[in-house]
Image (cartoon, rainbow, N blue to C red; front, side, top):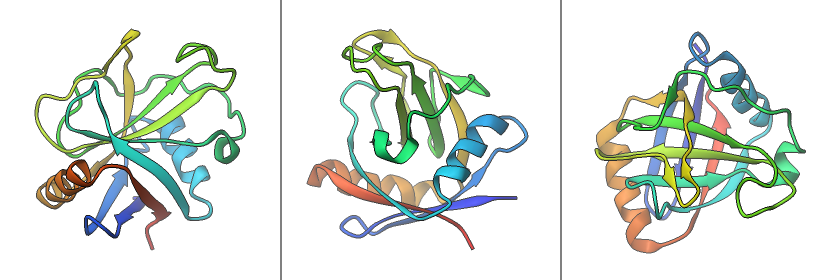
Length: 154
């Protein structure tokens, strides 16, 4: 089973998420390929979706990758879900680049409702240490923006 590490120093976030290669193969492959080298991605507590830390992948990192299919789709993520949301070019704010957003969901009541409406995402991985994730994400929420470090787990 493939897994990734997610870390952030200020909040003491340090969790492992297991990729769901069986139910989200294309999305898991995208994330695994993205992490061929460790990545630092700016993140912020989401405004519309509830208990989520949102890390939009910069275009320079994904290079305008191919559209991702919905796999293991959800609009109501559960605590511990890592959701990859793909939005095609020009859908979000009219920008020319597609959006690939990695969402860390840490509490109940999450929803993938944006100012443009419901946008399903793919559950690509699960964090086993939900209590640790929730505590760190609460610290990120209180502190504001952060930089998440993503890497393949050894």
